Image (cartoon, rainbow, N blue to C red):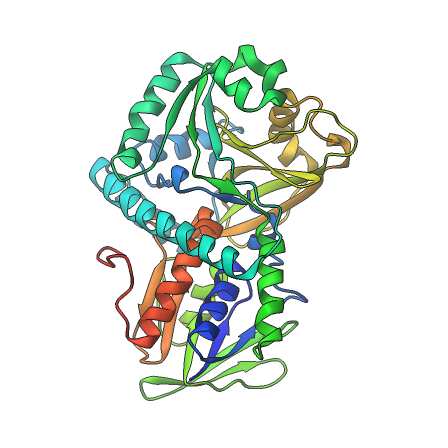
Length: 411
């Protein structure tokens, strides 16, 4: 078939790749001048099944309430005139029970682990350089009580096959000697040796180049303006340049998926949650991070991409706003500099803010809804890079009429 993929982030590009591998003629539409220019550019870069816990947990409501007063909360809520924020927030709160959080976390981990396996197949087949580090990720805590609670919490993922190792502070520093100066601030950590990191934008752009080399079309700088339907099917996608016709279409526009979907009567419970990141050159600094880490007390994630580090933090309920100012990054920068004082040229940090396409239960949307030739692959939230490869394979399976390799109940 000829299949048109809407969206050139990591989810859209990996989907186009899997569809092309199935023998389809693919065309991808992306409004930016290149693929992976938005959320896929500035995220933490972690392939982290070990971080599959959903945000919609019993602790989330009180954290959001605190954020109205305290400024350094990991989850922040900002009042808005957008009624969709409150509708979505209500649905989010309805998912914040212990039972639903457990169920959704296990579903998310199932997809994340499968997706990592698909990524490894692609990497083996394509030999893509994307600053991969497969030494694992350490999730460390600053008090013994927090570490004990974290270990107990992690037993849920461990019961689903996640490999973990509990480390004391000496073992954390042995794993990454660049943390030596911060040793007394770390009680210990939970090490997930099978987690990994890599630059998602570098990967996505290299994969897009392979799609083009094999005859696929990537239409960048092309803004989608609407979808024309006939009966129960999409007839064509309208853009500011030309219409695109296909036998099937995949909606993979991330945070912008519900905006386009509303035009054809499809309501998607996806809302943009703003995140912040810093990309910092290492320069000549002698002690950069050697593996990725998450400071669980401050919820600051730090990854190493070759000659750069990426620092990410914060989830802000702020609508389609990507504005930022230096003060927004002061806390996360301070945490990174405190942990790795000789880790990077912090004065050269590049600031970025972008949108995570979140669903209330933190699980993406797949398959058809209302229109027989429009397939969803969207709503991957804060670990879209982790879940993208498996989601792409699942979408290709659904279009082909195959049964996906993992159970789809609950997804």
